Image 1 (tube, rainbow, N blue to C red):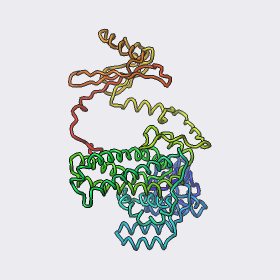
Image 2: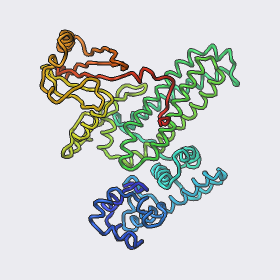
Image 3: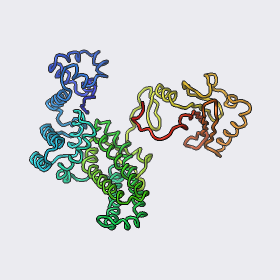
Image 4: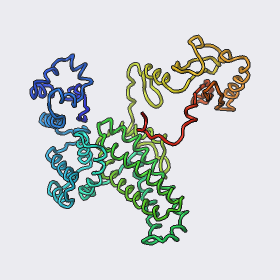
Length: 480
């Protein structure tokens, strides 16, 4: 279990019941934890940060004492975030002091010496746990990321001795590493091409090699697929186990790499060849360092943290995102059967998630579009009751023939669309009209099941006046 400032006291006591007596004995202000009603109500929403406030103490000290008590109670065989391997708290504190020395700007060589004297080896899990601890204690994500390369510089000798994971074909780690080998080939070609242009590079030679540079940069850009799979398949499962630091730090570096590759391509297109070389050297160094971090920190730690069911979940969704440079891998090896997780009562099992009926209704009624659903017999099954519908609807329309929901002059067009859908001749139809000061976009989508049988039609109506008027850019955090 991850123990952080955001951990709910109810979850903590459910995992470690003996902490109730420890907390009450430690601070009399926590006596209400003995009250079952308080634990079942306030305890479900109160975080350790809030609990520390009630007790009048620092949350970092509270967390450290809680972890210490867990270790003393015989749970020391479990990492604070992974529930897997034991992390020596003395070593962790000394490692933390080294990292804080990096933060202060202390001499790197001296810090390396301190580390060498501390231990003969540090595991990938310890590095990840260390960064998690620093973030739990309030160090900003950007600061942890800034220190990340220095972490590797300090620990590189030890991490270099860590065996690179060797997993069977079909396992997500094996697939990620296949892509890393392809990435290294592209990097080698680009480095060779830059060397051929001289040092410092000759402008005429750079211009002559523009096409090879563009082809290789276009290939390198596919590393985005590799990163997107990490972000959407691997990171969510790590976060489920409380491991959030690697995903936050790495995702930020992914975005920098994406931006640098685009920048290099843009500089090449604008014939800014010397600038392109500077950008290219930067991004190749960052990608190479990312490969090292993946194979010596992220992947070994992930293999410690995730179980077989988790890895099946990672593998299950990979092909929806795709692969960079390689063919789709085989399924994971036989014998790793994935048990289907039980569906909670009141939950609807969908292809890409589970929701209650309440959440489905909230989602549909809060979309900025009007939806109407017609079955294969042209009867209205559903409409989304949005606050600002373009066309009025009422419950009386349910079960009604869709032809009777349109004016007589439109019925022929409606039938033509539905007949072409039913025959499989068309899959979509769209048109747009002006209603007063609104510009309305209306689309129809044919619905076919897995057996390719026609099951009905979805009508989507949207006022796109505001969308049409958009200019320039607004970034994610620019909204008011």
